[in-house]
Image (cartoon, rainbow, N blue to C red; front, side):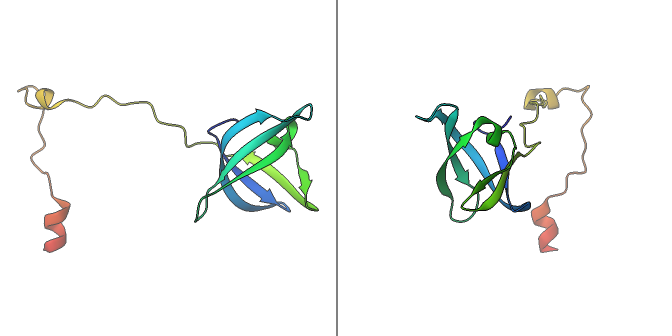
Length: 111
């Protein structure tokens, strides 16, 4: 299920149309409907609110202004687990191998 913070791909007539991030989902006054605030990821950024049922948020197709629309959660993009890199003090220890072959990308561009 797509939820707050997820990036979704919006299909229009079964063709990818645009990406959006779900900013908020709140209950609508109509039972079993939700106000879904989307940040449309194009230039310029645009926010819009769609009133959707739960199943539409989960990928079931629906129509909007006579067009077939479908929302698909984009998999991936999760934050990678934090990798503990060695600290400067760890690098200065004698038992830690040091690679002396550091090449500056700035020096390389000049030459």
